[in-house]
Image (cartoon, rainbow, N blue to C red):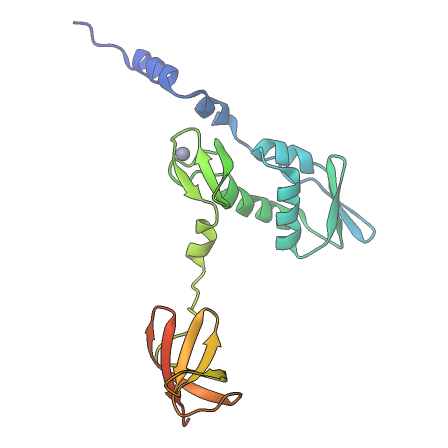
Length: 206
Ligand SMILES: [Zn+2]
């Protein structure tokens, strides 16, 4: 029995791949072309960049403006930014946009689509079929402390008095019971226990 050559195997493997994979082979983001004109900066090839990464221009622009902390508007294929922006600054933001909204985390290819699912933006990969919520990339990097932590002290206002006479304060989604307080009092509360969205505290003497 003849053993197929490596080339023949490779050929066969390529044919079996979905089309999207081969179209992404030359994925290249155009370098930002920047011209400073007076008090504005012009990104001359904005739409070239947007077309290369295949995303909605408005979405990309909104992201760039937010990340650059400047105002700006699309003008044909260009974007005019207020103030001075360097090519490197634009390139960095485009790269982080691509990492978050374009690149598949599984296979590293850009052949993805943004789809909405129950109001959550999902990145769907045509090349490998992977799906992930878009925001998860950012959230993983951010360490967020919950609004209420056991053992910590918070300054709270007693908004109500419960049936058993405990003061009731609220913080974020938590309802906090504090004995020995009066309605309207602003007190320092030591959080002793949190159970779900209910917490129990005592007046702190700190
Ligand atoms: Zn993938």
